[in-house]
Length: 155
Image 1 (cartoon, one colour):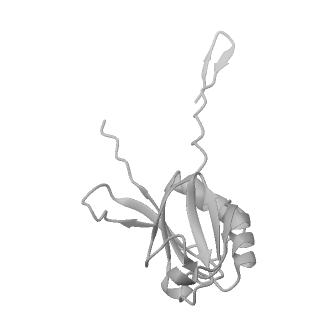
Image 2 (cartoon, helix red, strand yellow; image 1 turned 90 degrees about the vertical axis):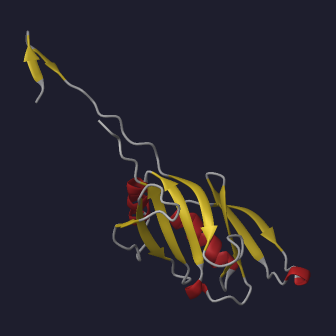
């Protein structure tokens, strides 16, 4: 409760958390810059609107490397690429390391992302800190594993 003394009320403020950011992205399959989609314009528009990404590059097909046309989007310096490459979107996606995971989930919900999973705690692969996670399945079928290490502050 506020402290009342000499007719004054002492109020304290709690700093708000920093805005959520992408910190890194890791592919489920081969390449986080060639996630399979069937329509580059639809992918670019959806990820810009719902994940807050910005289109930074378009690539033509590269038949030498078996790459189809590709669009690259970026947020906070982290890039995801979407390619018409014949891959199965339902078997692909990315793990996205974020800061302020609660803010990220709220942001996605407020932008109308429909298929957001419940919270979960996962063990780290390297025996590091546990991870706070949730999944998103995009309309194109790609699955995203949003995660942030849980930091325990010792008293």
